[in-house]
Amino acid sequence: MTRAEIAERYDKSAKGRRWRKQWVKENKEHLAEYHAQWVKKNSTKAAAAVAKWRKENRLKYNAQIKKYQAANKEKFVAYRKVRKALKAGILIRPEKCERCDATSKIDAHHHKGYEHPLEVLWLCRQCHVDQHPRTITE
Image 1 (cartoon, one colour):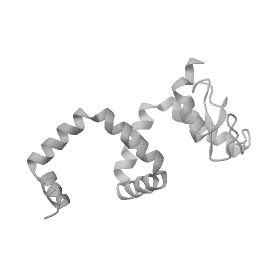
Image 2 (tube, helix red, strand yellow; image 1 turned 90 degrees about the vertical axis):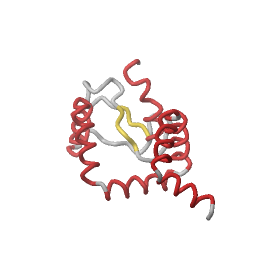
Image 3 (cartoon, helix red, strand yellow; image 1 turned 45 degrees about the vertical axis):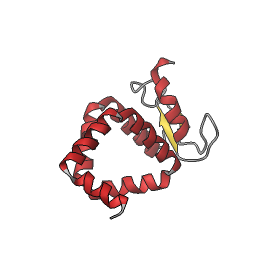
Image 4 (cartoon, one colour; image 1 turned 30 degrees about the vertical axis):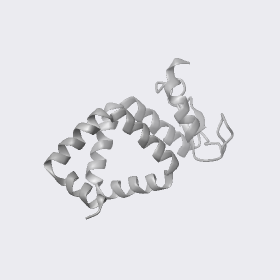
């Protein structure tokens, strides 16, 4: 029996599940950091895994989305207004990030908060993620 087979058998036992649950509870910060680094290095694998999970768990995913939207109503109202303004031609999505001139996917960032839904900065995903901890403090 290989080490992997022994580990798998232990993980499936009640004792193994209890141990793993306790270990995960005690190491949440470490696991979150590790996971973030792994996703950065393996972005295509991570995106494929997420897409597969969403497809296989459609009802669960939709329930999570509804729960998040209910908890963040102001954010989703602003998102919808930007989307409608883009469709109507009131706003035009630029091809470059306003911060770093990247040409990847450009997002609307509500830099003055969600109460000003059409006052947005157009940022690439990385600049958008970097900007969020500072959102309303400026």
